[in-house]
Image 1 (spheres, helix red, strand yellow):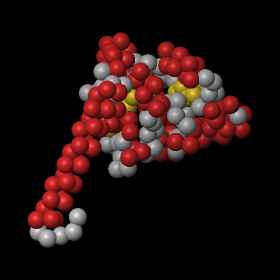
Image 2 (image 1 turned 120 degrees about the horizontal axis):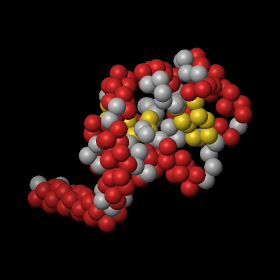
Image 3 (image 1 turned 60 degrees about the vertical axis):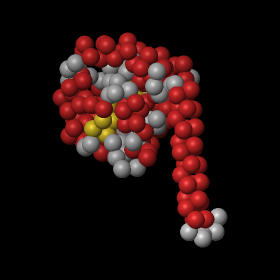
Length: 198
């Protein structure tokens, strides 16, 4: 997870601890600006330990440049989206670098950002609804080496042809504005026919 540390709440940490307990060979790699500060690092290590995550299972990296962040995905198999405040740009980075992101969808816009990206990429099976399904999804993906390998090679092109297709987004926005305008005009015409004011 390369999201801000403020998104990693106790529920998230407890859920990640369950994943690590089920995958004894896995490590949790976190890359965040907060870890440039020794106090924040020590505080997080203590929080993780309270959930049974030992220091040996953690790889804590400071922020660095955006290029450093993208390069750090080279040895990441699965990106863990925090909740209820999901990633957006961070999820885009992971997907662009060929790393699948598992998310837990919520009811607010900020808890649905990654889910929206995954839907655009036809990866709805990586969208979960609760902690148990989140854990199961990560464990299933961890056990699917062939799929992760395929996604590593496919995801950037899928991003190019959907999420990063600015011409398509411009067309869709233009169509939505046109439909709204036509709907508004039709309503105004109806008001005038009924004797209302425009």
